[in-house]
Length: 173
Length: 436
Image (tube, rainbow over all chains, first blue to last red; front, top):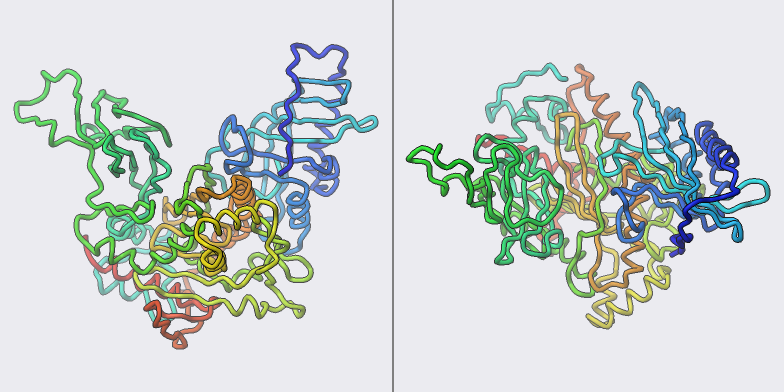
């Protein structure tokens, strides 16, 4: 098991951190998903990066509890390959999505390690065939500085209705 | 909605099922669905929950049997009680939480209060009760019959009918197969749940769990270029060989068998998936712990893959491959909810249990690689079945070629045949022809 839950020390304020760079990054990430550039999206993650969508509010661990998504790099690779497969029936026709990402809040930062925790509200509207539905919640990105951009150590999306039953979900939120 | 009107005499219902085919109306007719709720879900032995969901006195979970709201609660004497979650006063659902602990359950509406046996123990403003009002007559309605096997709790909402032993008997070995994998000999359904819904009839799901014919096609997107499915279990190097070099269903896959156990129950066998190549620190430690507990030979026997999926008709399947318990909840003729519980093998290293929980996310969650294509198939079946001019749904594969499996008193066929679906409709007809 990969250890991803290394909590950064909580900080009361994050002086000198430019919020815009996070906002740009989150919007870029959302755009990759909306353009179905899933392989490029996966490329934003570190090699030990994880993508987590809990199935209960305030879920503490992805290991002892079911999650909607908890993909490490291997599972992410399988998911992304499948999304590119010509016979993925649940994406025939494919979903069209649009993400709305709220103003990010820098929750924690460590300039020494170049690691940041950034949270933002997210709404994804998905349309497929004649149906449209909404996914909404708060997303928390644990980021590591990578040159003039970032890599994602973990993306966690806490949906407001995470415990509800869902119709099939094929694309990441 | 469907425009069909059928009369509900036993003779008319019998016309819906013929050898090797069933009428489309069993999937689309709202009146038949209402009858199913009465005659199957109002009567059959239904899986309610697992005792590990309510470990301490007062612990409860709420669920639905068919559409009926249910409370499963552990009483102070340690026994698990199953009762209807419906206030005996004006009908409100009493317990609204999905799980919790309570000494008393109070209705939100007028405050009627019940204990963990369902007894009515408090009525506000008692001076308004009539002289003949007796609190003893107003306890929460208990499920008339309950039964338990190795922690699996079932209930029947009818006073009479086949006994629990007679109903479950032929499937005990399938429950054993799973429970015996736990070093402590017991399971825990305490790792949350997956819930998904689809726009299709409930029977599409119970037919699917025993359908080995669809895998190379329905799940093509989970199979790589060399025909191998992604690894689905802790320690597996790779998954099953599903498709051969000519893109045909592989010999390995075709070799699987299905078993009709009577009463609508059935199961499909598993081939020696990755036998001998299954290894990871978590899995190896698990094998060591199990062997220590039950002996090396017995552990080997337990860990030899035998079952892919088992269905205990009508509402629960137990999967031996990606271990889980799956409960089917019909909501409307064309809308179904399915709840999937991950299983913790008590006594196994937690890293092994965690691995099982994690891989179930990608096989059977609403966002999984496998189940999503199945529910797409169910939705398209429900749409296709609206074709009025084509009355019959074909389930004839292997008809007449079934053979007895005398050692387990069952019938067997190729897993790519449809014998087990025919078995389900035989049971269906049995319930449906008998008026409540």
